[in-house]
Image 1 (cartoon, rainbow, N blue to C red):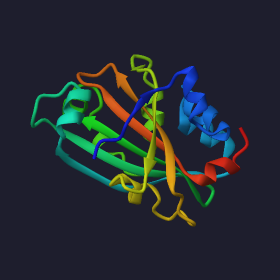
Image 2: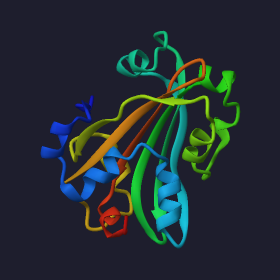
Image 3: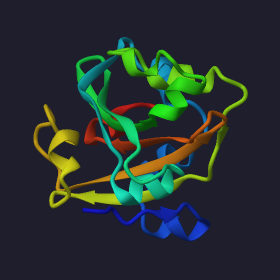
Length: 180
């Protein structure tokens, strides 16, 4: 099931709750922002697998049909609360080019690696509303109680390796309790 991603424009503000808008538009490192706001920040790996890119992923990541990628899913925690579900698609060509260690990061934050590389360029941010019908929704809300009905998310491509890397971040309800 494909999610309907939309460009983040001034009109988007009309469709995104005001309390979440600043989280979606921030182009800096989400990891750095959370480290600043949280007494204890951590990354919990949900799963990381190597698989063949789906056709829409291959198009987005400029891959040949049948190309492999790393599909990494994590939750970012602030203290004991999950505040963000993040999913990264990392083409194997990007790993063999510049990021040999990305496939073995475990519970290290990918954001630190990405934002410490001055050669990487971020695409414009897109946003979406993830609903319970989407297959990723159950992964996203793992350990979230009570479960929300939907999640707002953003995604970007990062260019600078042989192939772009995609990072999607979905904001869990506990994010609203953090001071900006």
